[in-house]
Length: 130
Image (cartoon, rainbow, N blue to C red):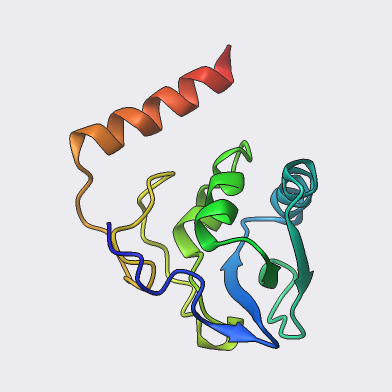
């Protein structure tokens, strides 16, 4: 997995991520998960709509945020659009890779999933159903 961009974009020493949620409810569930995990962040000034977000992270990485997104019941849009850039630089195009971390956080689209990644995604979803 190529995550060389992970956490390198910074403003005032904080790592930045941006993403789109499908709806405000998904963002609310992510906020709850971030709080539960003890992840500190602040919202960026840039907000393009009610569902586009920029987070300034303190002491955490894009991988940690992605993991929290995976715990949101309907977090697939956030997982598909998260990138380590300010919101104004994020094309917000979906990668359609579900809850599998992309090989490159800046990729526009992931076109293939390996078997192990697909199985891990299925197992995560199955565990939530029980």
